Amino acid sequence: MLAAGTAAVPATATVNATATATVNATAAVESAPASARSDTRATVAAAQALQADGLPGANDWSCRPGAAHPRPIVLVHGTFATGTLNWIELAPLLAAEGYCVFAPTYGREPGVPLLAAIAPVADSAAQLRTFVDGVLAATGTGRVDIVGHSLGGMMPRYYLKFLGGADKVGRLVALAPDSHGTTLDGVASLLQSAPGTDHALLGGWCPGCLDQLAGSPFLQRLNADGDTVPGVEYTVLSSRYDLVVTPVQSQFLQGPNVRNVLLQDLCPLDLALHTTIAFDPVALHEVLNALDPAHATPTGCRLTP
Image (cartoon, rainbow, N blue to C red; front, side, top):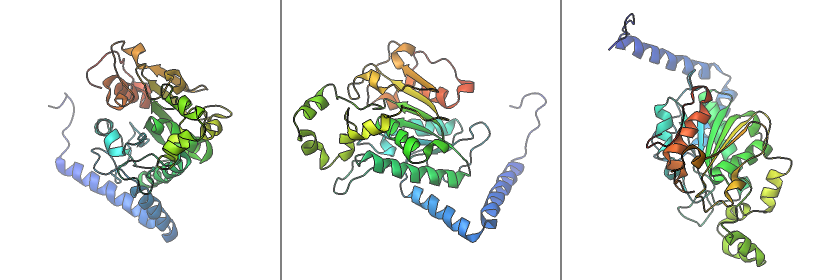
């Protein structure tokens, strides 16, 4: 039903407008110098090679952001997961809200099937750079917003700080990030107390796990001179019931443009764990708020985002 005074738009007009926009976009690409077209296609193809497969709502490389949500969203999964597994709920939710959504699967190691995000974290950050560059080239935008879970909330900070990402990212929303490493509720400290034990157990198949242990050389470099970089807005969402990234307070960031949120401050009944926070309705609603603060709505306890 149309509101009073609203004129109906013929379906043919909508189709014609869409076709015209597609033709104009194609013409703009084709009118660019041949070398520029080739570089753009190569950049996009490199990103597409990293995309998470079969993720509803994500990786539509023809998507063009609208005025309401002008920056594409890049979803960055956590250790052992894939983009498909980690974002099966959030990706279609964001797409339904009108965002262009993209998600890689990164950080695989030779000889280790199925598992991802286990490579050295610096290598994973380089893959993120490749993916973001492809998203920007495909969408014609200048910046993305990033939502990451666990390692996916920490690793992008390396990209921001050392790989040129600060000029290409507007917001980083991190769910349960191991910002300053983890003690794994004391297990990591026990491993490190016996010289060589941590490398013997993890180094051969998950070098990225070593990078995430509290006090690792990687984290010392990442967090030297501060947690943040200028020009990027940070949101950290954490749960007091997280037993993977411990202590929970180590997830929080310090610096300008930082908002640290403990989910139980919004909903005392929320029971999100480290592995379930990416599916938790309280957390997902806060993700929506962080990505579009001008239209944020109260969170509280809720059954759906």
